[in-house]
Length: 263
Picture 1 (cartoon, rainbow, N blue to C red):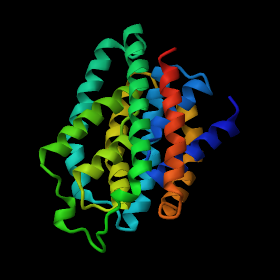
Picture 2 (picture 1 turned 90 degrees about the vertical axis):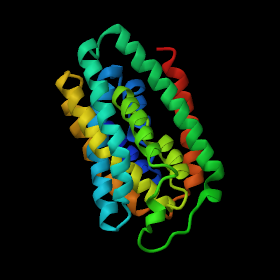
Picture 3 (picture 1 turned 180 degrees about the vertical axis):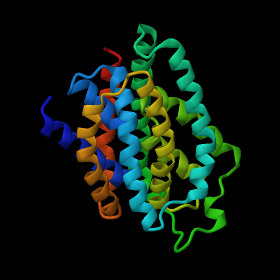
Picture 4 (picture 1 turned 90 degrees about the horizontal axis):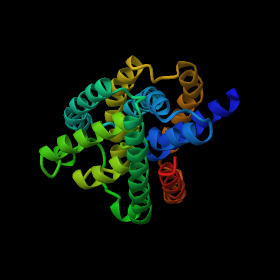
């Protein structure tokens, strides 16, 4: 594999994650499968740890600027972490390389990418209408969901989906969080989406590593590019043409999702 191409791919994905909150999995997993010929189960396992370390870097950067609403992160994690553990237990029993699991991963990944594309396009079209104006420190009302059970249930669904496919946080997460927390400003929504994914993807990634479905050499090269990328993206989040970026990505993800059904 050409090292420079892998590092550049990591940088590009890290930059986009920092700019938009789009999950690394929705971009990196298709890249690994289609451009670098990685098996789906190995791409998912490697990408989970890639996402964990990449988003950890983004979380540190955003936390230093006071953007991360930790109460929201805790609510989401209460559902996502138990769900990730249950999904890992099922994968351990079935085996990630079995034909049935491979087929399930590929098809579920295709559906997840299509859902991500729809969510991203919706956000690109209506993003300006969904902007919020909550200045200064977070008010209690801004971090209060429409109902306390909704973040937990949403976290559980995303925890299972991410563990199985490495896709699900990102655009889907941002779109749902905009509805769950209608008073929370967009930069804090993106920060929450990135932060709660860290423990979930780390747990899921380590679980996949115990199954032998992580390419460690590939992971190191991806991180060499992604960590500077997300550092830069998190600083440009309020300057980037978000609508244009999301519209273009939605088309690419829809194409990738459709292609996965032909594998």
